[in-house]
Image (cartoon, rainbow over all chains, first blue to last red; front, side, top):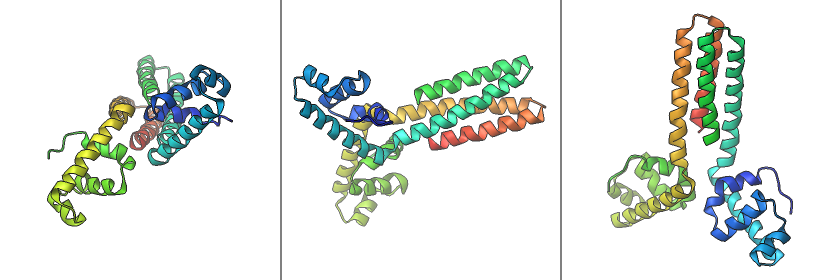
Length: 118
Length: 118
């Protein structure tokens, strides 16, 4: 079972919509990077059972993403925010006006907060 | 049936998770501001039927909000983004450096895009 780029994001955004059991299994899988066999051992379920839960959970989260597009929106705004941050860092480095420098630095800090909370 | 502040946001964020019929009714209700009686007329359902659909849909969306918190996150980052925008407008207005002015203006435009896509 291959983990595709972006799957972790699906779990980050939609994990809360899964059942407790699904969430637990996907948490082992994505966050702790357990193998299917290891999860099967901890959960006392067959490896096939774990495989099925992960497969079904992924399909559910993909349906949510099709409807809500949270991951796509997130990646888009992160890209824009990074770009803005880079622009502002450039302006901060380019000016000799110390007051402006400190004001821009404060703005950059706020922007980082937006990125983190996004 | 009173529309509380924020309900419209619930529909904006979670409307796609409702059934087509629920979505249609809530669209009349929130976006077209139809009364329950008017929606009942258009949908050929009783007023009570419409009331029930709206009530159930709202409860569903509130559960989603409890789990995902998209509206809360959105309002938080909109507030921060507005603050940043105001800071940057202040800096733009405060400088006589035309190059800086135009660079800051470009950053503000990008920031508006983040707010819109949020």
